[in-house]
Amino acid sequence: MDVHPHWLFLFGPAVTSVVVVAAAVGIELGVPHEPSALHWGEGVAAALPLCWLAVRVVRWRLRRLLVTSQRILELRGLGQRRPAEVGLVEVERVDAVASLPRRLVGAGSLVLVLWGQDVVRVLEDVRRPDVLARIIARRLPPRPG
Image 1 (cartoon, rainbow, N blue to C red):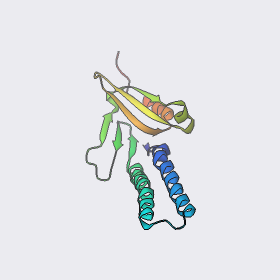
Image 2: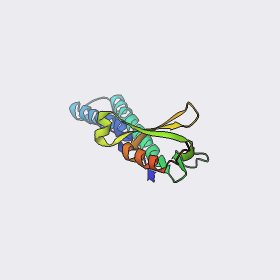
Image 3: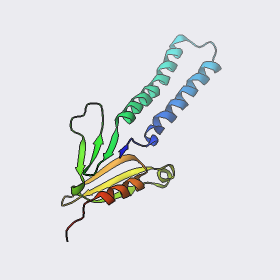
Image 4: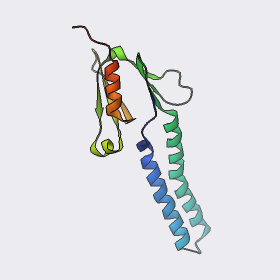
């Protein structure tokens, strides 16, 4: 399986961008003869959340979660040489965690509990975490005893 983060990853920057650009356009239309310094201020104020959104979109496109028959890989960035990797033999349990609003839109987190360690790996902004948790749980190797 190859999964990108949930679109909720983009929600905050997108809403902020829409609100700030709408406010800048409202000021532009509401105050017809404003000084040029205010124009520059509006431009900068509108550009900052748009830049934040652009960076978030690039990060969203370059981030992936791969589940193979042997391991779980979390890839971030372009030429990442060492992805975050967990072998399925290391995983004791996998849980899906989501608040009610996130559950309604199909987003959440995966919690991987590793064997013999007091380590918990949390994978954020996962699409359909309940389904993905079931798929991973089915692929976990049986434990002796």
